[in-house]
Length: 156
Image (cartoon, rainbow, N blue to C red):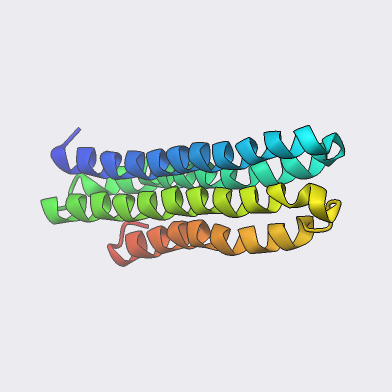
């Protein structure tokens, strides 16, 4: 493995780490609110599970980025200069930040929705999901921008 390939691999790993850490924190925030809600109204279990699981998707986005870097980018960067390796590392850092913050703040939005489930008798679920999806889109854009940036470097 060359230094350039190592830099690219580290970039992919950072994207996955961002997704995993962000998802863990986001789910923990939402699940914590879920426990308080369930102590009030145990009939809200399905709604709590739906909202608490939403921040999990950023882990998958980070994994997709790592897989793309390992399978498509990795073989092509060996012949490239150090600048390309640093570029892929930087792209991975950008993706990691997008995934970590998207998942954490999505967990915060979901926690707020979960806290209001008993008061609204579950009617807040749809609005909470829609608002959480707005935050989710930042994670999706992190994935899309990663693919675009790798394409600009002619690695895709």
